[in-house]
Length: 425
Image (cartoon, rainbow, N blue to C red; front, side):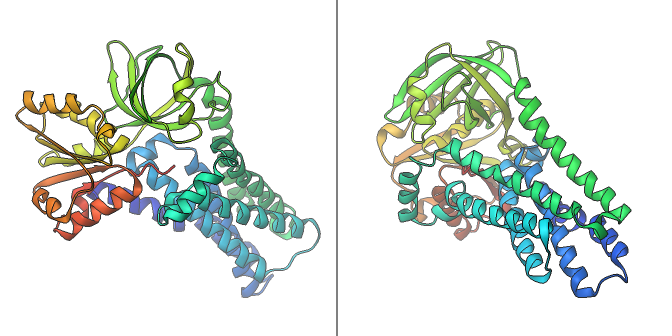
């Protein structure tokens, strides 16, 4: 993990877990001092910590771009999941410790039930943490996704907002809590900030999305399609970044999905993508009519920052499948600036897209070395790649990245010498 990235990530977790809940925890304790026993106070405090964590998880899920540049979207989504799960566990503990009646009880119970149901669904369908560890579960998930499509999953996940509103009502309905002025100030402030952020991201921001039009589509290989999008105006897209893209006029393709940028032509305002057709959204890519309208949110990503933070080091890229697309983007941007070794692996020859292009670059640029092969890298091959003065970027599936980084660690490459963004969202 990079030094600056590690610093910001550590600060992020410190603020999320301890700093943000502190004003509400302290004002609640002061307001309830002498009115209830310590057991009941503790139960109330863990309940409010759960609420703050859930609010924070909702804000993080809206992908603040400034936060993405500091810690990365994969880490943000990981925090969203961990904080959400932690909030649920604290909410259950809160319910066990304290008893309520009437609407207070009903709103609290309903929120916990919804949180638990959505969490179970999300862990299986919207996270690679579980399915990435079991081939059987991945196959089972693939079958179920024919019923529970990506758009369906998004709407189910948004039930977390409904549950959070129920928690808001749960607190406001408690008379002696509502009477604590300083606590309610912070409670309303946090709630209002989250509500405004959510409404802006889902109500106003879509109207300001970057606009484009599909002008070209061609098949690169079985299951891989290249799209070229003409943007209405010039934007800043950096090498190695990805965007969220939607086709607003096509049913079932009007929700945003993430795709890595292969190339951006600033002069012609052209964005190029290489997309694998393996999900319910991407399976329809080949049928999208030319001149279809496109909405784009982004770009996002930390690969470019990661490279710039290691300016003095040679670069070694290890890519697999479409996971090599951001690495190709970085390669073309850095050819005259850095010494690059690019190793690419694939399960079959046709998956080595842009192979001729990369081989020609290796001929034209003496500071660029390129090799490709069918099949995984062996531990012996990784040993030959090991350089203490190099920086490694790895791109591919979660399983490929985990395995490759594990082999690099075994040969003495430190975590701060490698980086990769897991495309599991």
